Image (cartoon, rainbow, N blue to C red):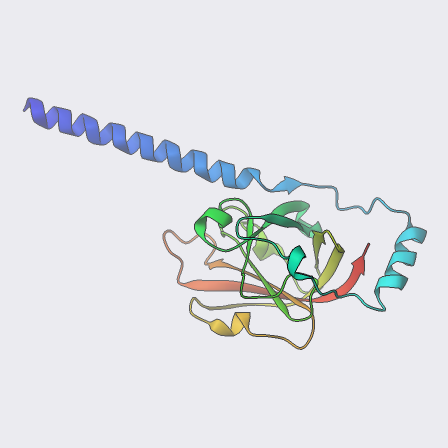
Length: 202
């Protein structure tokens, strides 16, 4: 009987410790999302001048020296509608996704011509992503300027749909996360947001 009580006590302690660790980990992931003021700081005249210059050639090509290494925080994703800013980390393993939005290393970098793919957890970094609609903007702040994308469409697909990461003939930014958003356990589907590059602001 004594050993039964000790075993039960040990299981309770382990359960509480695991729950505490999970809660701390969850809130640490939420903490990487910063609330921002989506109102542009620059004057309307300055913004117009910047747009006039960048519309002529909005995309860029990064040199080999500029390309991020695995685990590096190399950009920030700003979502004006959600008033949120979050770090973009190179790689999509759990270590990278715990720090922010993961950049799929097999895709181009944001701002380059083709399909840049970013992924995030539905219950932390991308927990409000379902509020976005076609016409909303996504801004990616990098060392080469801020790339402004406009959402074209959203859709739901199965977890193994590889067409999400296929190349495109124009600069595209694709966001992916698990779906349904409030599913308990590994979610069976994926929620996709696809956007097209509108301009680059220096």
